[in-house]
Amino acid sequence: MEFSVNIYIETSRRGPSKGPGKYMYVLEYILKDGTPYTVDGTESFEETRENELALKAIIAAGKRLTKPCSIRIFTGCDHILSTTHNGWYIEWQKNGWKKKNGKEVRNAALWEELVNVMDLHAVTYTKDEHSYKRWMREELSKGG
Image (tube, rainbow, N blue to C red):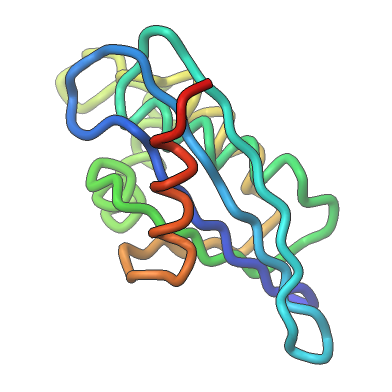
């Protein structure tokens, strides 16, 4: 693919507990001369969980891309990493967003939207450290 993009995701919530939270993403385009160009976004929610925040952040960043890209998504969300690395979302989609046991997938609408938004792209997910992490966490910790 002609365009190379990194998407960095950070959330203010950790784990499955529900409460107020926000996400931040940095979308980094690698220009033809090798220099990065970045845009970022953030959104807050009254009642949410880490998984929801990370999914919403990836979707919001992905919607900014208008051409097919090779995307590397950096996230610390273990659920997203295990789901994508194990291909569970593919099975869920085939089963009408239900698990093998017949129960509905939590955040099924977000997973479906993520699949649709990223369909145009070649996507990989990683937990690798990145240079934006500290700044993003500082931004998320600010009030407002």
